[in-house]
Image (cartoon, rainbow, N blue to C red):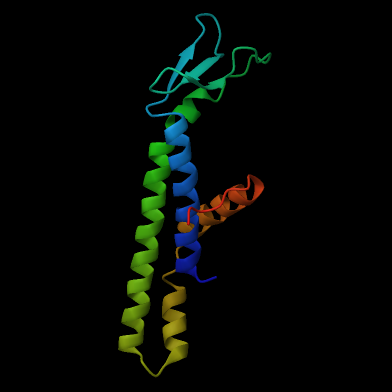
Amino acid sequence: MSYADNLTSAAALLRTATRDAKVASPTPWVPERELDTSAGVLRCADGRIVADRTYDLSNEPTDLAFLALANPDLGLAVASWLDDEAAAYQAAVTGAHEVWPDDEVRRTDWLARRERLHPANVARLIHEAAARNSVAAAG
C-alpha cells in the first residue's frame, strides 16, 4: 500500500468509527466526578453514560478527562488531517512526474523525503486498532 493510500484508508476507518460513536454518543462528552474521589462517569450531550469509573478500586486518576478530549469530534479532525496529508503527497507525486518524467530514481528519492513519519504512525495505529476491533470503512 502506498503512503497516500495508507493515510486515506486509515482516515476512512477512523471516520467510520467516529461517525458511529457520534451517533450513539453525541458530543460534547463531559466527565462528572464524585466529590471525594477521581472516579466518576463520562456523559455525552444527551446525558447517557459513555464511560463509568465509579466502581474502580484503584486510587489512581481515571481516564475520563482523556476520553472527553478524545471524542468523535477529535476523530473527525484527525481523519481530515490524514486526508489532507494524503492529498498533499498525491500532489507531490504529480509534480515529481512533471519535473522528472524520465528519472524514476530521482522521483522516488524525492518522494521518499515527502513521506512524513507522524501521519504514517497515526495511520498505523488506526489500522492496528481497526483490525483488533473488527472495524471496516464504510463502503
